[in-house]
Image 1: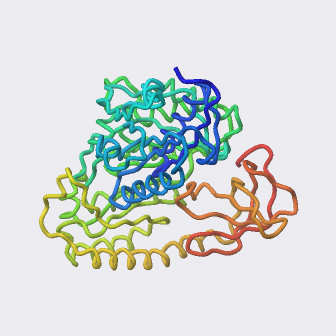
Image 2: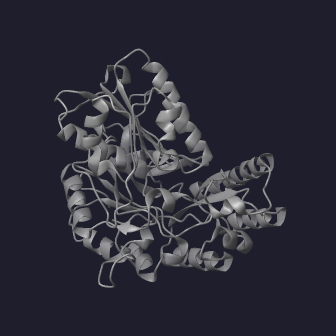
Length: 454
């Protein structure tokens, strides 16, 4: 047993899915009697939740560990490493970093209290459990971001087996979360004032695919969510192109609560590279899908992610990607260079692309995308849009910032707007877009919307 009143600080690295792990860990610890602190030096326990999706993320995790250990030198603070890095390196972490007192993998959080009891007794423990056959949640979850927008995880793991990705090895096969559990969490969030629900998973469009045919798929889950009468935004992230069904397109076009926005990580558009990546669609499929989305959902904002420097990527493959991005005209783009992950099929592929060439290609992609994003944003000038207020700008008493339905939290741009009336985070306003940059918008003529989005 652990004594009450111990202080805990947490550092969460990586994506929104990892943050949910951190929030569930903190919720579990607060229920067990811990007290939350933002100061690692004031804490009895510091937990660092690590990311290992790409080499850069692994390096950030290691650097954070070493830096935090140095800050805690000479103290009695217990330092615990959690998350994906533990699944990759296991006991090597506490062996190579003496300041680390314990390491716990992503499938072991249900044993967190017992694990910590051992660590606080002075045992240096690494706990790695096999993935559960079903989705497992920790309760309650402690939100660490402003409550007006919240991510809700609908599944864990992945069964896509992309050749470059370690997620199935780290997180296990795809496991859908019980729909009643999802809607119960959403009810709790909405009753607490949340204005935007963001559905996330490694692949949201695979929801229900691991169950019997009568189990709801993503479309069925969205239908259950939309039974609520509340006014809120529902945003769908991390879709898989070949799994987007006509019913999903229809749902987005018919219910104004679903943001006219879709996150569509295509990774590449060269048929050869897509085949090497073990992605289940080709260039023609992408074109048909994008045309269909824009036809059925006028004004929809599309976001994608692309990888350059994949083994075997020739100049011709890269130019295909460059030309397709110019043709597809995604509103938002995230890019990264291929990162060799030991244990993946891509690690054995010939035709390694030098890093300097991959970085040059990445920089060129982003330069080209700036003009595409600017043109996309300029189309909005003169239009009156609903904006979710996120905060007040430091400089200027009447300047605020927020997002439209066409901008996802953290990864896309913002709207800067002027308002004579006092606004607070979570307020809805209607504002006219008056200027645009590649990433951000400027708005004026702000009118509060106390009844919610139009």
